[in-house]
Every structure is written in C-alpha cells, then in structure tokens.
Image (cartoon, rainbow, N blue to C red):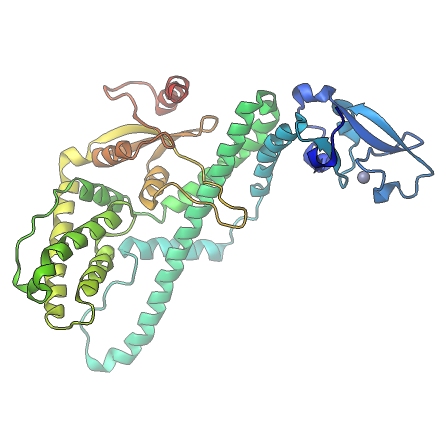
Length: 414
Ligand SMILES: [Zn+2]
C-alpha cells in the first residue's frame, strides 16, 4: 500500500548511519535513492539535492540499505514510512552515537584544578563561610571586605559541586540510554562497546570529582536523622509568643528540618534556615516574643543535631555493608524543559561517594556503606531504583562478581 505524505518521516540517514554501524536485519530493506545517471557518486534521498545540480540527469533506484549505507549523502533526508524498521533502529543508533560528544574533551588546566581543590576545602567546613569570631572594632572594615570574598568563595564552591553533580548524572543517563538501545538491538553491541567503554572512563573521572566535593560524614548524619524518634512537644517559655500555635509550629519545624536534612548532602547546621522560616511564618507580622521563639527553636535544632550525631557515632550505625543499586537515568520532560533528576542530592552523593564497583553494561553500582546509609537506601528502593543488600551473610567473592550475579538474577525478575 503506497504511503501518503502524512505517513512519511524525513530522516537524515547519511549522518546517522555511518558505514561502521551494524544494521542487523534492516540491511535488506530497499530504500529509494537518487543518483546521477552515471551511477557514480553519492546516493541521495531527494532529487533536489544541491550536489545533484551539476548532474546531467538523475535516476531513481532502489538499493538495499546495507549496500546504500557506504554511499549515503550526509545532507539529504530520506522519506521513510512511519512503520519502517529503520526508524526505531535509527533512534537506538542515535542514543549510542551521542556518547561521542562527551569524549575527547579538553581537560581542565591547572588554574581550574586549583579552584576545585579550594572548593573542596571550603565545602569541608560547610555551605557558607564559618561565622566570624568576635573581633575588635578597628578590624571591622577589613573584616567586611574579607567576608564578601569568603561568601563569593563559598558560592563558587557550591557551583562547582552542582556542576560536577549534574554533569556526572548527565553522563550516567547517556550511558544508561545507550545500554537500553543495545539491549533492544543486541547486534549494535560490538560497535557500541568501544564508545561505552570510553564513556565509562569519563563517567568515573566525573564521579570522583563530584565525590571530592562531598563529605561522607554528612551523608551518615543525614541517615541518622531518619531514624531519630519524632521529638515530643512540651511547652517551653520561649514559645510564649506563639500562643496556641506553639505545638503546630513545633511539628512543622521538625518536619521541614528533618525532611531537608535527610535528603541532603549539607551539614546539619546548614538546615537551620528551614526552622527559621517556619517560625517566622507562624509569627507573620507579630513581633512580640519572636526573638525568644527563634532562640528556643535554635536550642531544639541544636539538640536534634546532637542526637543525630550520637546516633551516627554508634558502632552499629557504622558497620560496613555491601549494597547494590541501579540508579535511574534523568527523566526526559518536554523538549524545552531541563531533564528531571529522580535522585535526591543525598542519593546521588551516596552513590558517587561509596562506589566500589560499577557494571557498565547493567548500569549497576556496588556500594560499601555504613549500616545507617544502607538502611536508608533500602528504604528508598523502588521499581525505578532497585536496591539490594549484596551477600548479607558474607561472601569471599569480589564486589564486581556479586554485582554481576545480581544483574543476571535480580533485575530481570522485577
Ligand atoms: Zn544529497
């Protein structure tokens, strides 16, 4: 049945299918080509192609795709019926081929590396410059210029970390999508393998660079917040200004603070703002008793932090465990919108920090993590992100092998 124009897709076959791409069964599909009457030169998808202008006359011939692929014009589009098997294969080839854009990039110069090392030093202290200690009046002006510089330094450092984090996730997604393409068209594997292996090297460099900007202790303390009992409300002289709203405000403050703390890579002290906002909102425009309430809540937050650190420090919290995780790719949304990352900052930082093995073909990672972190990872397991305790009863096998076993037995079952 002849196709109507509505049912055609115009595809630049020549730029997508280079001769080294395996075609599988599509190599026998006949495609309509236009060629100069001499029969020599490139094959074209349209008789209107500029390169054909000088030809005395143009012939149309049907050529098996496998033969045509050596001679495809790179700037022509071929009209293909929407049910052509070449279309989904082309999409898969494009997923693999796009790995190349991340390879052979210029490496950072010494100045960039120095700036990144400084970022790691800054972030080791917290998200923001440490509070200045009391100083004499005469130093105040000098101090102020110095403070500005420090704030800029920390902002730069946080930006470094965000960029590393986002880029690592982006590369991971490209690899994941190329794996999906290969599993759909296994004959692409020999061609894809070289690109994927080189991408995996770049991916790992990016992961290490990101992990260098994250402090593992913060991730453990965040996991400790998750297991803290919900604090009991009791009246406090500092709550006087809140009146009947005191208990509700207290619960909201804990909820906001703990949710932020659990899913973050930040130092616990750097979540104070969540509590501050809840208390300020409760007061609205009223001022009476507000400073006292802020002071009371600061004491509570300090106590929650103390409890979390105590929990994180228990021997049972820190016993090492081997866990496997298959991290999801970024989610493609509308064309013009940025891709959405299903991983929280905490999850991403944990996966980057504790990796001991990575199975490139399955996209699975083995992590050696403290018990509390293993518990939280298992708690966030889902169909999108399967998590499994590897060898819970111990095993002499290396993590790579255990990971591979999971690949064969585990994911395919779900
Ligand atoms: Zn052409």
